[in-house]
Image (cartoon, rainbow, N blue to C red):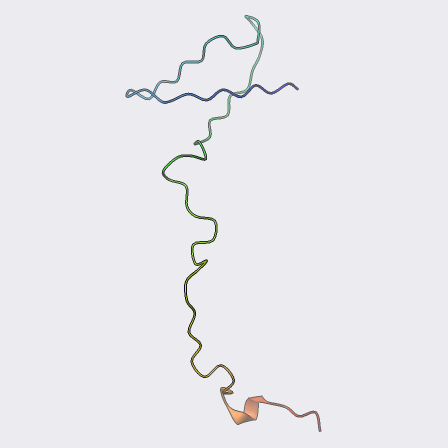
Length: 71
C-alpha cells in the first residue's frame, strides 16, 4: 500500500477538498482524518516538567508498625 499525505484546512462549512491526488479515477482509497500536530489543541507531553516539588516529611513512616526488620 502506498500512502499519500496531504495537509489542508477545513472550510467553514466543514468540507475538505483534495485536488491533484496521485490516484486514478475509480481507484479505491481509504481516507483517515487526523488533527494536525501543530494544532492549538495539542497538550504538552510532560505538563509537570519544571514544576517544583515539595516533600513533606518524606522519611517519616506512616506508622512504626508498618516497618518490618526481618528478625
